[in-house]
Length: 157
Image 1: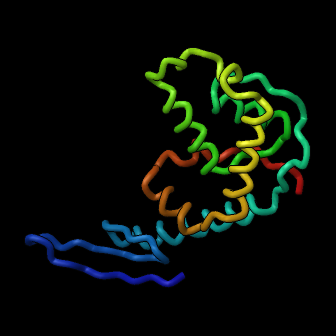
Image 2: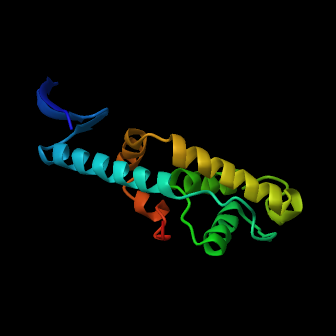
Image 3: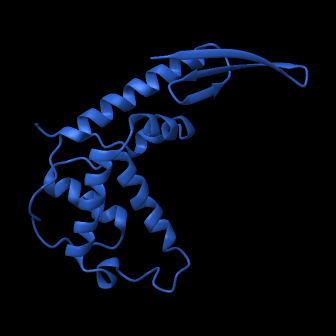
């Protein structure tokens, strides 16, 4: 992995910058090693997720009250992880409902369960097949708790 380091004098303070790939870190020398590790982890994760096939048919109608709840049910029913980016979007969709007039209404009364599941699988296919590991590494750099959204389900490929 290409690494570029520079030291800049900024208002009397020396700042150390390290760029690995497209990710720039400001801190001590260990940051270059951390950036390299993060990029490698993201590349391995993305390579693994690309290999998992999207189910060709739906198992059953899944009742759900939240997007994250539907995601959990899908993971259990199909024995597959959902991509980090999918998990983040499901969380955001649940947060979007806060304060709406339908906030406490069951989500499967608003959106048909089959359409909701199909939406998740379509989004999952995009994330598995068309996401850059560098984009993932950059997001993970900004979110020290990213492992909370990386599923620990390992299907047999």
